[in-house]
Length: 188
Length: 161
Image 1 (cartoon, each protein chain N blue to C red):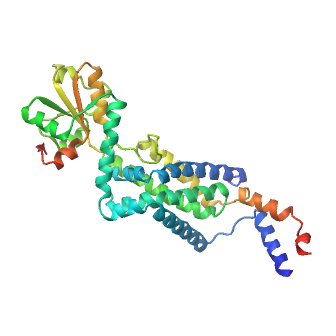
Image 2: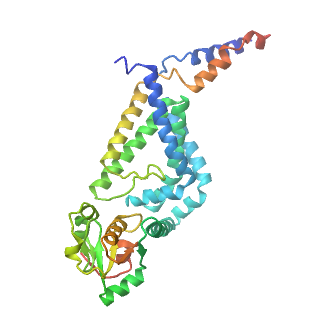
Image 3: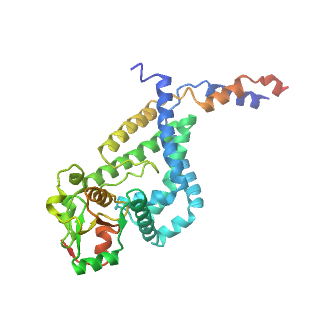
């Protein structure tokens, strides 16, 4: 009976909402409980993700997913045609396409597809770059690219060019990293 | 200072931060690959760190957010949220310095670039979570309300006899 009364008193004082006492030890202990539960739940529910991460197959999977997403976004949201890496290289070899780098001027300076023209997305969209001056022929095959992955700068530039009347605009979704990784010519 | 020592200020902040973190965590739990992709975009981490972060961080933020909403272990939850925000802010600043134009990965389905706006919003949230940490005065919460209903309004004599 005494025990029951004690329990009731404990609950009453807790529920009265008095100022909680502070102790770093308790706080750290609680944090560790949170982390332990998160590791348990996250580990159980993401077993395949974790095994991919430790087998080094996660990054290739992410890159693949990002390319698929970007391709569908280019077609559905932007209405822009996507060009495959091999086809882009073929046009590059035939010198029938102009490559446009939509990244910043600094990134372009660090490295770009050999012979590409820098058309930074921000400057282009703000009207600071006049495409008519650098690309007088509206029938030219134009291939825009940026950083691959989820980079949408090339899509913005490609859309802007299409709206300006250029009829052969394509996006290289693999971007500069994909081009460089394939061992194709770059300027650094 | 009266404003700082107000139960309702504390409650509002707790609920606001808690809801934001729960809202951010749930889609990440449902799409951990999407979060892994966002973390990969920072181009800072190896595969193992990306995988572990995508698997565990949403659960940590979900539990912390729920704890703030319910008013349990508020200091621990606030500390975890503050630490997470410090990491997010650092990542966003590093990305801006490196000139990366990427989504911060804070919310799935909402475009929120890692830029100064995101950093200032996160700084405000950090101030809020530090407030709930240092000025913890959880007098109004769902858990306390339930406890009050259960232990105050029940007649213990009936249980004891």
